[in-house]
Image (cartoon, rainbow, N blue to C red; front, side, top):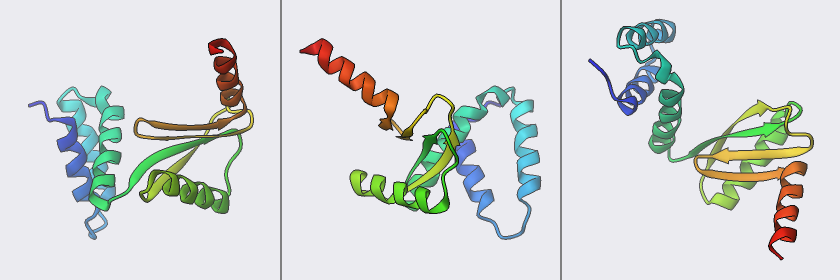
Length: 132
């Protein structure tokens, strides 16, 4: 039986919030279920849905911050605070190293992208010059 992606996400959130320490067993059973239902290729979609459902449940936005170098805990906290202020809602960001980001950072939260990279700034300037 094919299970809906959001149903997987909701079930994972519920099982992750249990206090019995069975998280490893939940992950193993989850992966086996995906394989049995031939949905293992949907893992990326399921994890995205998991972020959305977790955000809804805890009233926050989930996203990623891309940078060329690892961010310190203080840098990540500052970025989260600035993005939260801009979006008007608490934000939880996962840092991701991206070699395409030469300088600056790029933040993606759902459909929203905040590009503060050098390449992004150059592209926006180029578009302004083309459009004028």
